[in-house]
Every structure is written in C-alpha cells, then in structure tokens.
Image (cartoon, rainbow, N blue to C red; front, side, top):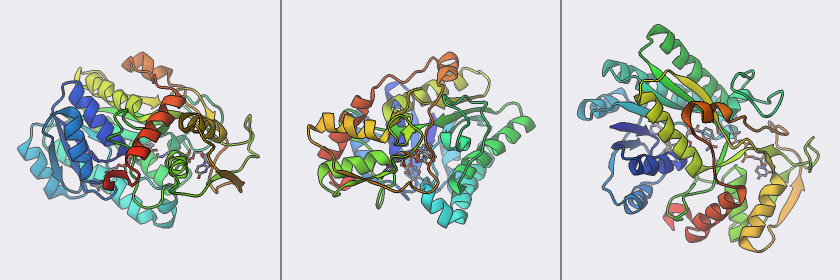
Length: 336
Ligand code: NAD
Ligand code: WQD
C-alpha cells in the first residue's frame, strides 16, 4: 500500500487517481488546510472505487503512528506542504514548521516502521534564478524565498538521512509549473482564497470571476518581453509519480529528476492558448514586474526520461482546454 500525504490537494488528487489506475492500493491523508473533502467524492466517482482516506496532520506523530500501525505502507509520496511563495516571506515560521516539521515527523515514523521508500515533492524553485535554461539537475541550488528554502532544506535532510542509512530510497522530483486538470473536469486546482499563480488567474478572468489579468512586466529579456516558464500538465506530472514509485519499489537507487516538458512558454503564449480554447479575448493589463520573479526558466527533462521512462505528452493547448473545462464546470471549485 502507498501512503499519499496531501492527497486531496491539486497534485495529490491527480496522482491518487493515476496510482489507482496503475493498480496500486492507496491510503490518502490530508488535514484540508488547503483542500476540500469534496475532492474525495469526485475521486470515488472517477475511479469507481471506495477510497481509503484518514484526515490528519503530518506534523502529528500520534496520528502518523496510528496510520502506520494500521496499514502495511510500502512507500510514501509526500505532497503535504504549504506552497504560497508570498505568504512564506510574510510568515516564514509557519512554512518552516509545517514543511520541515511534517517531513521530519513522517521520516521518523517511517523509519520506526521500516518503510524507507520515499517520493518527495520538490520544486524548480530550488534553482532560484538559474544561470541557463534548459536547467539540468546539477545546476546550482539557490532558493530565493522561505518556501523554496523549505524544499532545498528538505532535500538536504533526505540526503543526510540516506547517507546515515543506505536502505533509504528517495525520488527527489523537481516539478516545474503544473497547470491544467483531469480531462473529466471533475478534479482540478481549487486554491483557498485569491490565487497567485498564472493559470488559475487566467481561468478566473475567462469565467468573468475577475475583471482582468495583470501581466507582470513586458520588459523581461525574453522573446516577447513577458516571463517564460515550463508549464506541465498535472496529469503528466501525476504519471511521473507512478513511474517513480514503480522505480523505487523495484529496488533501484535514489534519483533526482526534473519533471517538466523542456519547453518554455511566455505569459502571452498562455493567454493566447487560452483565448484559442475559449474563443474570446482574455482582458489583461501590463503592470510592473512582481517582486521576486525571474525572466525565464525551463527544464531539461532528459534524465527523467532516461531513468524513469517518463516524458510529458500534453500540449499547452490541452493544458488550457482542461483547465477551462474544470473552471467552467466548477466556477467556485469544489464548492460549486
Ligand atoms: P496543494 O496545496 O493543492 O496540496 C497540498 C496538500 O497538502 C493540501 O491538500 C493541504 O491541505 C495538505 N497539507 C498541507 N500541510 C499539511 C499537513 N501538515 N498535514 C496534512 N496535510 C497537509 O498543493 P499542490 O500544488 O498539490 O502541491 C503538492 C506538493 O507539490 C507540495 O509539496 C508543493 O510544495 C509541491 N509543489 C507544487 C508546485 C505547484 O506549482 N503546484 C510546484 C512544485 C512543487
Ligand atoms: C508564472 C508567470 C509571472 C501571475 C510559482 C512558484 C514556484 C512553483 C510554481 C511551487 C511568471 C506571470 C503570474 C499573474 C503574471 N510552486 N504572472 N500575472 O512564479 O513561475 O512559480 O509556482 O513550488 O515555486 O514560485 O508561477 O504561475 O505565479 O507565474 O504575469 O497574475 O506568470 O510573472 O512569469 P511561478 P506563477
């Protein structure tokens, strides 16, 4: 059985479904700090299975102890974390406490139960503002905000743990910019409060829930002056986790890989692709640059292909079409 922490969140819910489709038995846990229990009902109807889920906090050792005592967990995919970059700068202690405290507690309980296969949700933000793109896994690590620091420090904690005990197998998965939703429109990204990321904001403008999009600068050193990122469809990303679990459970050694498409798209490319999907213009206004933003980065995903046999397949247009299906069928997210 595979334990998913943060299982009802955006990437967790899509990965849960893909793991079930691949034949894995899955136990999900989440404290709903940034997700809705309604995702569970949607996942049950999508998978046609009764889900195994327990509500709880990964910072709570008694909770995790009871989970491991009552289930034969062979591997863990650890999504549970806080992820709002801006809030991590205004309230860093909350981020260090939750993201590092949760990780350490989980690893201690895993060790006590002799479970040492671990998939970690890392992020391209560990690279900060990379010197060059495509970014390879051996690029310098220079996280630029407390959230990014928690991912960098988590990687360090895991690497030290591996050095202390070679029985640990860890997949460090560095995600680029996940967007899109399951093609059914039943599960998707449902951030609490006002979103900060481009894709959910474009979706809100498209649906009329927001008046216009702010484009944070068109004077960057990029082909059209707007920021360039490696957007990856969340279902492609989810399938990367299935490959990582297959890989670790087959006894292969730890690995660190980028999960991206290898292609950079600008903010204007995303707006244009979304406009094509909805058949009308997206209203936007160019404003000042957002503090902390960087001009451009995209992945070199070739190591993930070589080691996991995984590669992203879905186009930007498909990401926007699936995002729009989720948004238009669920204008208020899971509360619709
Ligand atoms: P999300 O907020 O949708 O999902 C995270 C889930 O973890 C939420 O359901 C939340 O309720 C839960 N959670 C948080 N703290 C918890 C705790 N202490 N105990 C139990 N549950 C807890 O975020 P997501 O986009 O699905 O991200 C999943 C993981 O991927 C996170 O670790 C995130 O940092 C990482 N990541 C995300 C992105 C991205 O852009 N979405 C990019 C790179 C890495
Ligand atoms: C993308 C582009 C913005 C909003 C963040 C985290 C990163 C990772 C993914 C978790 C940039 C531009 C955005 C808007 C805009 N998360 N933009 N108007 O900043 O690349 O990455 O999410 O690990 O750590 O930092 O993603 O979607 O916020 O921005 O013009 O209203 O869209 O300037 O060029 P980002 P994003």
